[in-house]
Structure formats: C-alpha cells, structure tokens
Length: 316
Image (cartoon, rainbow, N blue to C red; front, side, top):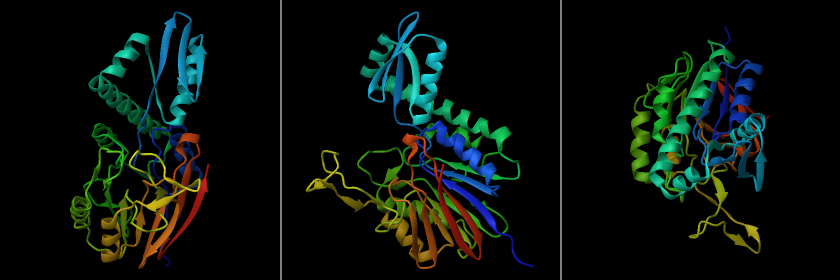
C-alpha cells in the first residue's frame, strides 16, 4: 500500500500584514493541505497615528502622503489599509502622539498592546475558517517581541511549536527555533553563533530520529541561495558599487553546520525576504518562500512530502 502524501502550506515573515494573513487562511482552504505553517516574524514594526484635529477631522501621514479623514467610514477604511501594509493604526490626539514620541517606555508599552491585540485577532480568524483536521502551526521569529508567545500558546486550535517536537503525522516530526544570528537591527531574538548553536542542539536533541525530521529554523543556512541580502554599511545604508546594490550572505553558520551534521529530511527557513528558493545541503532540502508583505502579496510554498520533498512556489 502506497504511503499517503503529506501536504504543507508554508509562509513566513508576514510582519503584521493582515492582508497576507487573510490570504494565508484562504490559500490553506483552497489547496486542501494537511498542515499550515506560519513561521516567524508575525508582527509589525510601525505605529501609524490617526490624529484627531477636531470633531469631523482626523489626519494621518503615511505612505508618503497626508490624508484628511472626515467621518468614521473614512477612518475605518484608512485603518484597514494600514493593517494590510503591516503597520498598526492608532487613534489619538496630537498631544498624545507627541508624548509617545518623547517617551520610549510608553511607546514600547503601546507596541506590546497593539501586537497582542493583532495576533489574537489573527488567531481568532482561524476558528471558523480552518478545518479542525488541519494542523495549524504558528511561531514567532527574531523580530517578534516575547509578549506574543503566550497569546499563541494559549489559543485553542493553534500549535505553538517552540520547545517541543511537533509530530506532523505518524512519519514526520519537526523541531523549531526562532532565534537568528546577529543582525544590524538589534532584534529581540538574535544572539551569537555560539549561543545559537546551543539553542539548535537543544531542540535537535528532542528528536527520535533524523531521517524524517523537519528543521523549522527561522535563520537560513549561511552561504546559500537562501541567505543573500543587501549589504549594509556601518551607517546602516545599503552598500553600492558603481550604483549597483551589493549583496552578501547573512545566514547562520550554526544552522548550516547542524544541517550538514544531522541531515534532516527538510529545512524550513525565512528571515531573508529577498532569497526565496531551494538549497540542498547533502540530502536535506532547505526552503525559503521569501516575503513581499508590505505590498500585500503573499509568497508561499506548497510542499508535498512522500519519500522525497516536492514543492511549488506560489504568490497570491
């Protein structure tokens, strides 16, 4: 009797784009997959204030323009546009906006609140839209603050995969790590390669075997087609040569080393939005779907597991 093909929908780096999240749920239903994985960098990075000027006038400066909003309907439309881009809309007075701009502690507190609200809303959407027989796996990435973990972990019907082995079915088991090697951006979950190696080895140590293991590691392996990003100078600006942007490998040496050592069945990665594609390291097929979240375009992979890894890159 032939073994059944196991079908996965894999996305990463949605960075707060509600439009991409809605598309993720729609695609999962459309293609009748067995498992849906949203792995890493779920939250947004920017708060977009919608400032109340007077009773029938709010202003919002975003997307390179200043918008005047004159009623609740116009405000609601603008709020949805902001959410779809990956930002957090926030209604306030000019005084409140100025206070937040001067008080980092208060601004951080607001970010935490908006991130928690957004993630809970996303997960609540799954209740009526995802078949109960589909495994829905959601985990944070290096850019996500720790305040979102409990929201995911406690949500019924969602699997939070960090710190455990997730049995995708009776054949394939997965371990996960959201941490990445050092970046120029000082993100919440980055560390030295030495520390990252310890974290990876701890997760890998939970596995019973490696032949059918999946490594869900947010950082891509170093010096591959999955980790090429614009080269950044000390001023945090892109480096060019004769006007041409330069690229460099920014993935993790530790991730590459453990893949070479243990040779899992498949590696699932993200983090580097520009480097979608496939890379084989020995027998291991490593994949990165890439990301264009800011435009509302969902880049995703449909993956079929049955003795070998087959995959189809798609966008929606």
